[in-house]
Length: 350
Image 1 (spheres, rainbow, N blue to C red):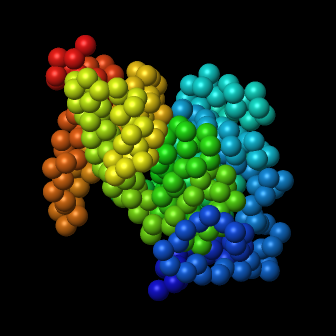
Image 2 (cartoon, rainbow, N blue to C red; image 1 turned 90 degrees about the vertical axis):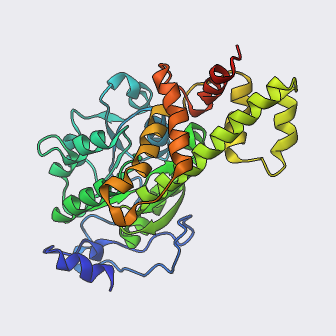
Image 3 (cartoon, rainbow, N blue to C red; image 1 turned 180 degrees about the vertical axis):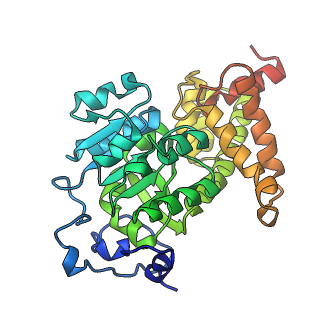
């Protein structure tokens, strides 16, 4: 069944997909099957959405933390007009200094934008900034607008947001990212996108500024992919920090050790990003460790929310306990590489 007929059965008076035009074929979007072609309806050629371009596409951004500010900065640097909402306005200073405009609420951002990104901390933050009936972004979406939530959140909430957007004749894409602060600054993030495939392809001019997007499936699939990603990342961080502690206890030169194994089977993106930071005791966050605890918690919650999707995850449970040790020690705002401090406390290492 094609996507258009599916949207129409939801009761939409006008199928938003008929408004979308063909994206740049050089896009980095990586679908896992062939993209269908959607042509712009002649009757709507003068209305949004037209092909995305800095001169006509208004971008909104909700959330300017470590990741959000870096990602929004890349959009702004590409010449797009940017309206932002920041719960803590001081965190948006660099964006405002570069020409972004500040809105008073997520709803205000949506009313002034064609494509709206959100990058906040927790699922309850997503619910607040997107679904609040008064101040939430969806309350002020114009028909044909597209909402992109980059927060690591729950798949069920992503589906709820997508349904609410569809009621407004709009689309919501769940597009959590992986790659940390380095990937956000360099535009090399892995973007795990769930939602209507044609819409995700249409968004490629924006996604290409941030990294490489892959269509993972219908709404919620991006979030499910991110949770699986976090299980893999957490395991790598646990193994890397534990290996470093062992090397240190054995009297090895830790820096030389990291260089020696980096080109072997133990080498990984985690080691590339965090290895030297651990050695230098640089625990500045690319993402707060408390968010990793949240993400692993969502993986373990599947047994409570949906028995058919329940998965036995002993590794994830153990990893979560390790990272929770950081939070319990007051280190929830550190980066994940700070896990070395938990190993040190367990082993009595100063």
